[in-house]
Image 1 (cartoon, one colour):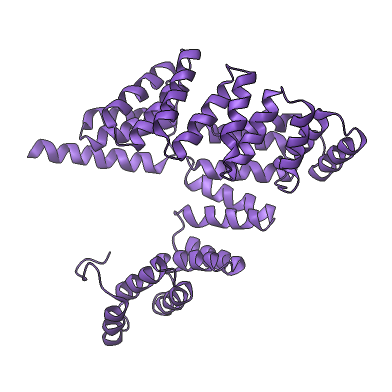
Image 2 (image 1 turned 60 degrees about the vertical axis):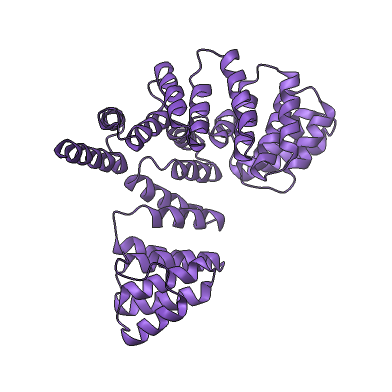
Length: 383
């Protein structure tokens, strides 16, 4: 966008250039982006407003203005700006997704549902939008619809721990959300020595996006029934979301109780990987592979870990194994296609993208990638 400008201009340099050329939108966008990078949010807001005086339909200005308001915790203004961004570029999904996230955070559930639907309409593979929509449906008591969205999330993000947790427990809900919470609290108060009711209260609070009391209720359940692997796993799931170091011990305890607990193996391996403990992560995924040789997910996890570490040849090998066991693993195929493209193996990359599009024809990003690869292959043949 800023071709021809100094590659590293200072704020002072840009201000001088803007004084000389005040209607130059590219200069102003560059200055605003530097403000953003320096976390000078109020200055960035002022600059984006100046840009919008010059071009009221500038998508970048509206979108980034929304992001800046979000950083300043001015959520209502953020949503207004993001709606303007969506109006100025109707095909873009990013503004709608952020509107959904902000609305969900503010408990404006109907607005969140509408925004997530708009996101998915434009980007069917936005797994986070499916997850957000499912979570919003839970809070309105639309449990069947929620389950469908969590399943869609899992289609794009294999073994997503949040969706797995919800698919395990949402089908057990039968009352409206507030009634579920009241009933669970009443049961825990009535039978305080019963670990089941404390565990269920924690589960209901998690599903209804209530954080207070969750860890306490899970610890009560574990104290009353310390050999219940599921209780340890559910506590680890919550601790992991908060980056709590006790996550590892809870998962290890779950595996001591139930050595073949696959979900615990995956979550522990993922936790290791997210904290840079790559050897431990691979070791855990290999343990899962040995325990469940016909399961594609250990190969996917190892392949994804290798890819993140730049070990592309090893990553391709594991992702191909995952796809041999589960041809429908969307994310494994997408990552394999990207790795082929990185190594300029155009025929292989094109083949994988064609398979992706055959199963999910509505995904524009995959279609765009396929067209780019075909053009790159054509250019390479002409050299």
